[in-house]
Image 1 (cartoon, rainbow over the protein chains, first blue to last red):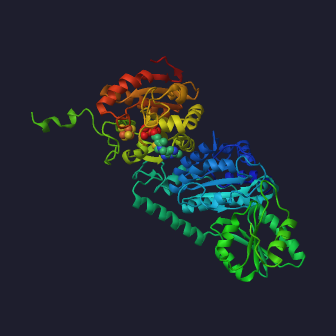
Image 2 (cartoon, rainbow over the protein chains, first blue to last red):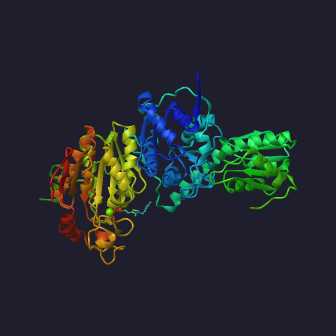
Length: 366
Length: 260
Ligand SMILES: Cc1ncc(C[n+]2csc(CCOP(=O)(O)OP(=O)(O)O)c2C)c(N)n1
Ligand code: SF4
Ligand SMILES: [Mg+2]
């Protein structure tokens, strides 16, 4: 039996972590996501499920706590917002390199620098193009509702353990702060220590008992061995592309024009599609749910059907590069977006579509 | 008497701990790191806690500690071992969790993680090998480098006006209520090594009793970084390092001691 509640995105995420059977959360306050740790502290998950919640001295400490707990096979999560994620990147790279499962949440705000506490999608590059150092990728989930803030926690843990890899939930200040009704999953029991030792005994550092010692490291000083390690990571990313791509197509069947948008932009773009349709414009929306893997083939195919594509993002043009890479110049592709904490309206999006894509099909370069 | 008559188990005074692997140590001959490893493994063996011990290796010359210690180990980012150990200890409260860190790792880049793990009184052991220099990266100045000491980034000697004074981390963290046991030892003679081993044992016993944070600083040599022979480095250490970093207990059972 599930639970229907009215909640903020950040709170839904926190509650979902408890219910997903998470073993630990480590975080450091930053707007617009402080509700995550506040909610967790107020809920006393240590009493509810035995989940550990600790306020770290910095985002750097928090991500390295995640690394520590993850190295022992525990289900562990951290959350932050843009400047804090920048601080976590070394640790995230270590998680990828050492092949550790963990869930990281970025409730994005505007940047660069201290920027603004208002919503933004300006961390797209950082999220899907590496961010930290080295040849690695994150599996990136982009929630577009409070419901998905909750649902994606369990999904993220599943992917993290399936691949032994860090997973990023890329949200933003809008999804984190807004209240919607949300259906929460039932409580999943946390794994016992014995089960963890049994299930992850081949790699987790839980103490050398009845087996050879386990070592968690991202270091290999021999180039051939390090190269093999990195190649093995790439195989994993290929598998993610083949097995765990997620996207949503809205009114694409008869579409002549296409909007591509994720997260909060997708919510606003959905309204723009409705307004367009009311005006007789056959416009559809492709919403990537995973930003890596990216729906490249789906876009490639849609490019045979539509006359032009508008990438709508709360930034100055980041995902649009992936859209262009996917469609191989088959149709014009343009970007529309507000940034710095400003948020586009459905009307603005529709106007941008009409002006940049529909008018004469030509691309307006930025 | 034949040599083989002498080499018998009953005549053996020192040997390699059974918890040390057969991998060739990557340390320079004469370096203290290997001795500290061996003492730690002896303690873990003698306490019978190998199955429940998880170590955290640093970035520094001892980054490969996991190649030499035959126990479960996680390698941490530079300076972050206390945060990594915090999480392991919090999620596995019945385990023995230790970090092994150099002075650059613990007293420079990882100062915040060190102080906060100590201040929270995490139930872990920190083994802190202070050689007053960045050994691994080729002998640069550390926060612990002595005044006037020549390193590759203080080629004219460490100067207090622009580079600050040697940082005494053990004294600093001993003043935090969260620390239970803070001691400074060395391993350059048999006598000192035996005392250091006792201190390491006390530290792990503190974990068993849930007493909170124990830090064992080992003032050690870096003959390569100091550009000396092993023997010269030990003499220099006695004459200079110990004057700045006096050996002895700094805090015992949560109470500060007078030292030096
Ligand atoms: C983030 C980061 N910065 C710098 C380095 C380079 N680095 C590696 S080891 C080291 C210093 C280690 O010195 P110490 O902790 O004293 O250990 P020792 O080698 O002397 O035992 C530095 C600066 C690194 N690996 N990572
Ligand atoms: S460089 Fe210094 S600390 Fe590193 S192994 Fe050599 S002597 Fe030891
Ligand atoms: Mg050093």
